[in-house]
Structure formats: structure tokens, C-alpha cells
Amino acid sequence: MNLNFNTNHKLLFISVFLGFFILSMLIAVGPASVMEYNIKPLLESDEMNPQQKRGFQVYIGENCAVCHTQQVRPLKMDDRFGRASVPNDFAAMKPSSAWMMTPNILGTARIGPDLSNVGERRGNEMWNYLHLYNPRSVVEESIMPSYHWLFDEVDEISEENIVVPVPKEYNRGDKTIVVGQDAQDLVAYLMYLKQPPVTPSDLIRNRSIRTGSSQMRFSSGKQIYGMYCASCHGGDGKGVGSAYPSLKGSSVLKKSDPSDMIKIVLQGYNGNPQYGKMPAYGGMLTDSEIEAVINYTKKAWGEGAKLTTEEEINKLRIQLKDSTDADK
Image (cartoon, rainbow, N blue to C red):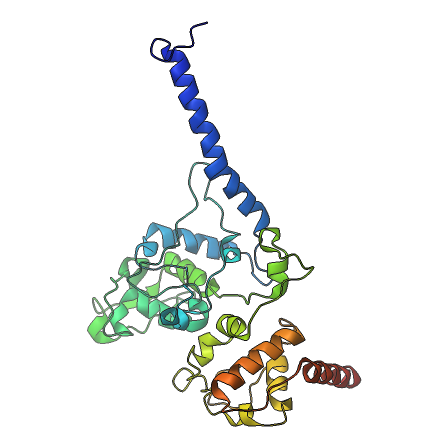
């Protein structure tokens, strides 16, 4: 047998091919398969319905992903888009067919805003129709192109038509603008884009990121605050305009009795119509995690307020549960 690579070209080709195949399996295919097996969709995530799936195809077909990402970075500048993305957000994404790769919605270089949570930020369908027909009709400084071909211009409307009240200066003619099917599907997909919360249970389910303990635990209050609180109260605790309150110098944080603060974290808060509703985190965070995040906010913005203990949180959690059970 001729084992000389210089003269046996078949042996050279087979050796190079096998080396390439083995390295590809070890470096690319193997790790990707392990990640796909271990990373599961978030517990509270929903599957797209048929209309939303059609809208996603319109989204890809119109090249929306060229300017918009669906990957929120864990940076302060991205707080306004939602919580930082995690691998679980993309676990349900599958190739469009056996002959097509998974549509690319990732990236950090964007021209327009990230759309990961646009269904929450822009949850008004008519606003989205106006924005698609002519973005300048709702955002004067927008550089996004008009997608007027997704709409129909008609002389008479029928009962099934959705009329878009386009301002005169943005109407391409004198006809009435109604929503086309592609526009309806696309907006249905955009309304679907809402970030479900990431809970410790979600992280526990992923064997690739399990710790040595039986349950996943966050290591610091700052980490918990960044994941759950910063998108509304801001990384600096100053809140977001008139939509979400500032934590700096908050009277609730300063109280020596921690009950109000603990109740707000456990049960959520919707008592002030001036601000957006705060969700309940009692079912998402453990007592030790709530202790960590409350004490982080107290140290950062409570002006020397008395710290909270895990025992106080546990006691109040039991009292609230007993009270709820008694009312049933």
C-alpha cells in the first residue's frame, strides 16, 4: 500500500476530508447540537398562530431584519427595548423548511430600534398600520421607508375593510387607505413579539447552565435588579420619564418597616395611575433573591435605610398566602 501523500493523491484527499469532517463535528455540529438539546423555550412563551407565522414570513420577505434586530444587549443603552435577551428566547426558532436556514433575526448592529418587545412597547395595531404605511405620519424624524404596497387604495369600503386614518399630507392620493392581508399578518407578528419573564425555573430546566446545587440561584441583588427591574426603573434608579417612578430617595425604600416594600415585590403594584403597572415577582423569585434585590436598592438609593432580612420576607409571604386562602 502506497502511504506517500506526495504520490497517492487519493490518500491525501481522503485524509484531508476526514480531518475536515471530524473537526467540523467537534467544533461546530457537536456543540450546536448540545445547545439545541439543552436550551429550552421559556415557560411562559407562546407558539405563533398561523397568522403570526405568515406575518413572520412577510417580515423576512420585506427584509425588516436588515434594520431591526431581536437581540437586546445587556447594556444600559438597550434598557428601553426590554430585558436582556437569553438563549431561551430563540430556542423555538426553527428553519422555514428543510432547504432553508433559520431566518436571521439576531445581531447588535441596528438602524431602527430592537423589536424583541415591540408588542408591549407599541401595542396599538392602528399605530403600527400608520407606521407601516408612512412612518413619518407617527414619527416625524423616522428614516424607515414606506411600505404602502402592503395596503390597498379604494374608492368604497366594505364591512371587512380596516380603514387606516392616514393624514392628508401623507396620503398618496385622494382614495381611502385600507389594510392589505400582508399588513394584517405582519402587524399580528409584531404584536406577538413580547418578552416573557425569565424565571429561575426556566434556568433550572437548562442542563447546560445548571450549577452544582439542585436549584439555580442568582448571586447578587444587582444581577436580579438588572434582569427584572432596570428596564422600568432604570439602571441608575431614576425611572423612565413619567412612565415608571424613580427609586432614588423613595419613601418606601426609607421606611424602617419593610412590609410595604416586600408586598410590592411579592404582589406587584398598580396603585398609582400615573405610572405603569408593576408585575408580581413572588412566584418568580425566592425569599433570598428578594432579600438580595431589596437590599441592593436600599444600599444604592435608600439613603442608609435599614436592610431587610430573608426571615421578614418569608413571614410576610406566608401571611399573604394565608390571607388569600382565607378569602377563597
